[in-house]
Length: 99
Image (cartoon, one colour):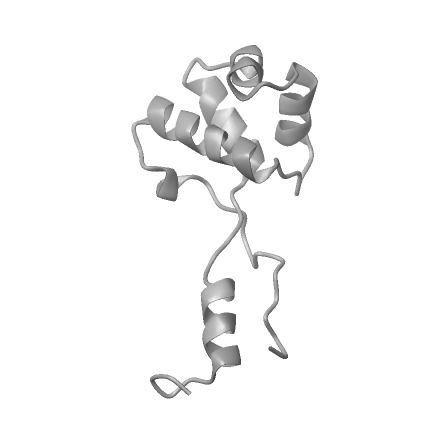
């Protein structure tokens, strides 16, 4: 027990406090900033179809390294930090309950 919380309780607070990036909005914001799907695809090393999939499929997620690149592009083209990237509403989908 640390600071009055069990390990399971601490893990639940940490995980539930984070939300996944909203990749659809990240791609949309990049497009509005002049960095269209073809440019995003080239920067990440994927196809425009993949970019369209992220933009049009709720819950779609890139691989970790691709997501990191997208967040760096988003930060560069929006002038904000990657931590300010759009997030999905609600829970992260990861549960530490019962830990």
